[in-house]
Amino acid sequence: MRKTVCVYLVGGAVALFFAAQVAMAGTVHTLTFDQLNGASEEEILNYYNGGFGSLGSGPGPSWGITFNSNALALESEDQGGPGNFTNEPSCCNIMFFLTGTGDVLNDASGITTGFSFYYSGNSEVGNGSVDIYTGLNGTGTLLASFVVDTSLTPLCTSGPAYCVWEPDGVAFSGTAESVVFGGAANYIGWDNVTIGSSSPVPEASTITLLAVILLGTGLAGLATKLRGRRQLQS
Image (tube, rainbow, N blue to C red; front, side, top):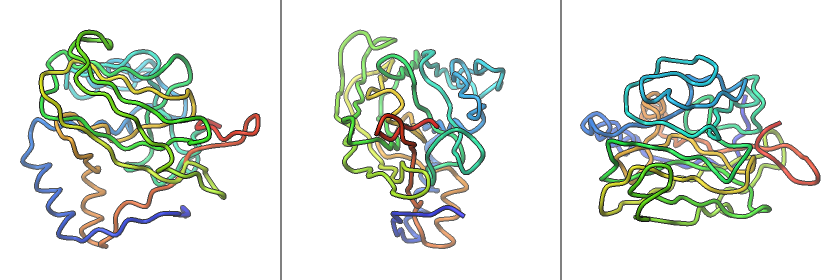
């Protein structure tokens, strides 16, 4: 059983409200990464464009969304994977990166109403960042840029170390075609990336659970020791 360090209490009425919003918002897409091979750190690539991940997972939903090769799915340690995290917003994969400066999401059809996600990171190695551009692959005009504050996601002292998942998001003017998720490689992870909403959307099964037990998602962790620091991947 997972050890939850932080639990957000949420009323059942609020959970039902979010469920209704998700049902009505047909243009809202939430990327959970859970259908990819997170145990083998599969590249997400074209999975959310009706295609496949690098190891053949798919075909995924045809949402017109692609990722650069840095973007990997990672399965949680308590599900048998190499990821040092738990209590992620939707079980059992997240997105992270091991090389380069970050993950790049491309949506050629355009993002207009907002963008949001959950994250967990390590404040010992710095904050993350999210930059939203009018062009593909982080080109064109910068529409929005903000710091992802890893001090809000303290590490666990026992069990998987990345122990708090913080929601964040932004509304912006204009049409975006790419989002760049930055930070220190292997020290920050992302989940439930939501296109078309400035408020992160839990997985549908999570919403149902919230409504029944009146509990928010317990937020917990991601890391292991290496050179005196805690990383995301075991």
